[in-house]
Image: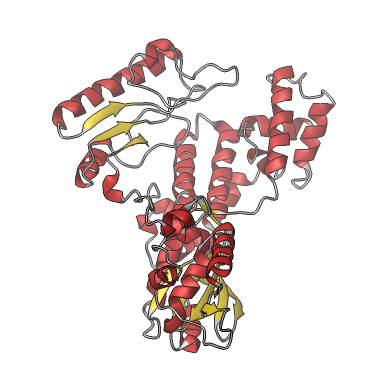
Length: 456
């Protein structure tokens, strides 16, 4: 099972507890939700951690949960989960995937209308809402019915989209694979390609290139990757596999002599490469490919090969263009005039305005994993000048305005104490604040007055 599938199952167990008795099982609900959030945000797969005997390293997962996860990975199911979910209609769970459908609301609809088909339940609820049959149910009403139709419509529009990985997940997957590949003596160089190398915010498949004089040995080493689900394709110079997390990884090999040409060809965006090829052909009579550069004025002459990207770009009269800039937004012209901008580096970052600490602010979701002081200590090691704490607002459904103010007042008092003991870093008090359905903020003006600012 992938992390997403495990997290989804844990949330279903938490929802099952909530449907049975939210008060009685409060701590179980929190434990399962916390474990689900932690697993969903991990880049390392739970199945891989299990193989390495490292389930204890998962934040928010105690001994009992580790045993459940072990059983799940070994057998594909957990007896305790089955017991908890035994009396819950299966048709409830697809509704929980839709924003605004809580466990109790979903359970009530499924029970009242005898909806027993998980495959059709979303369409069934949409039909009931359109027919006006939900508004009359106690605790729902016209507005709730209207909100449901909108939520289902929005959910439907998002269905079927190609799944893409967020950059940090894709980057760590690629880093692990590159590190594994470099264990082979046949690998001279290894680099990710495409949108990952350009550091786009989301990435599809992970593509990796290897410079080698022994592609056969590299391919054999690659397909022996211990965290693969299956081999998709294996050829003399390329291969593809599916990781245990369900991500596809494609590998291509290239002789060292033309390594720079391949890197350039498969790192730029489509528009960047088209522009570069057009310029080379029209202005310099040169034909570009992943194998090198050919002079079209003398077609019979051998193709020039390039060990590095720098040499490849220099042959075109350009400075080397960092992968992040290869989007055809003027970088080719800048490279020709030696005026490319300097990229932001990690050492240039002086602080962070949006982080969640583990301060007990009692939000509905997204608790941080570390204390404010731990974060400040780490920020100091990074050379930061400021740090803004912006936990999610206290849960609106579980607190009155007065209770929310009291929580935020205690938090502000604690932040003032931190300011006194952390003179080297400016501590800023922020909050991530919901905008409610009616347009109001989740906290009132009195609570807002406690903050330096808020993120809405």
